Length: 281
Image (tube, rainbow, N blue to C red; front, side, top):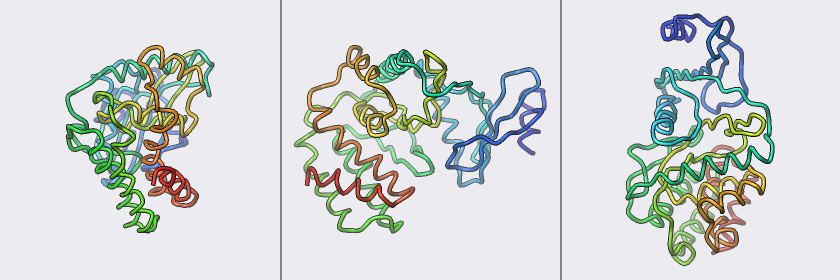
């Protein structure tokens, strides 16, 4: 069955056009122009794309939080169909405040342990999520060391830099002494995954969810300059940003997304990991 036929089966309407969209590191992405209903986004890949996981993550966020995400109509490993969200660029300062309201609310959804019910993805990279009672152990073993080993296996990073990451892991409890409770995070909040529409956020896409210390989400947004200062001011009003985050923990947490980028792209991200780790080792 073609994507067009699947859409017709789901909606009773056949798309009038299938237009390419930018983005998507897994497979191809199309906008399905619908004759009367809201347009749809169609992601197409082979079985290795694991698009069903993205569909599960979006459904989880829709069911367990107020975060605006596209409604999923169909998901399988090879095909993901969801509603298209209209957006209009960078967004105003008020839209960045709205983003803080949304992520602060998301981070109020907590459980007793760190991890998730299943492994997820960040981009096309597997993201293991076994349940842990201890955040520092989870971050060291399932984020930093997991990624460092994967980067060495792929030939993107030297074993000597991997060993420095390991030394950092042995020192983490010096810097992360009182983590926040396990909170639901989006997991991949860079600018391309936040859809603004004027003074508000229309939606968040391409999640990499799990339960974490939410500071790791704030660090990620700072690394990629996702938001203006108004976002952090508002988030601090709502949930608080503890002392030491900006000075120390932000840079420690950002070793993880930098390792993700080393695995995907290599290049200058290797030197950024070296500098980030070198500050503490």
